[in-house]
Image (cartoon, rainbow, N blue to C red; front, side):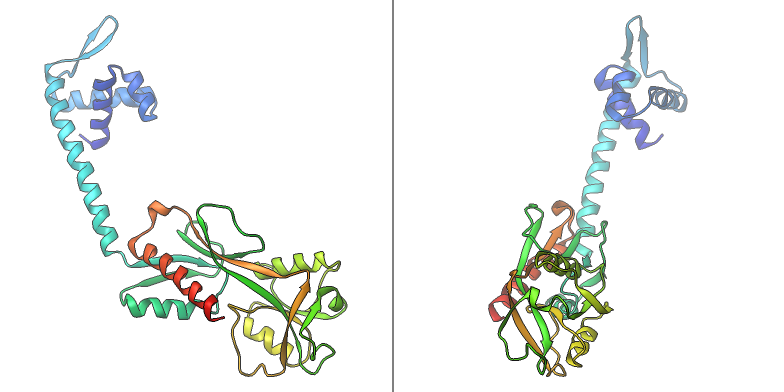
Length: 289
């Protein structure tokens, strides 16, 4: 006897038909019939009386029905209790980190200062199976499952001793012939800045491509090119003394830092706490920056 067989039996009694029970449970009718016959064989008793128009539960079946209802009710309560207990004890935060990756270790450290038992599973790429996702976008998302954490300006990093070193602002088309130091094309920021270059009428000439943010600014610091820098989340490096940041006047270059929740009802307790913590963290970051 299995819980599966008992569920099929209950549905058969309550619907008055093996056919209707199998349809409700999404099972082939022969499978439902085999489950009923297996129960009858196990107990050595018929559970239904066969009539000319179908089947009707008999006295043996009514006894099993009463007990089966109790068994499945208790099973449901047990599953709910164990799931609640798992949520209480699970301190894991699973998140895909596609933006603000430089800040993320410090964010985690600050969270763990409040919750010492927190455990992070973080992948720096798109992770469709993870419940949380930190990512950037050019447009403000309209998905109810997405919270905008920050609206971030993107500036242009140029060498201080170069032709634009004394400027405060620039139109992007002015650097259309210059070499760009850029993140790899799979990164969200690169896709956003490529779009802005197209808006300005050119495709950026990439002379150095990397997936390391520190390497990017150091290359500009050496006077080898220009680069896009998001001012709120980019690492501040004291060695970048020869880098000058220009406001991009046309087109206005910005991006949104977002938190996506795949299934709000499926978050663990610490994942809910961390989602709230991220919102507060970026709000504080924007107010300081």
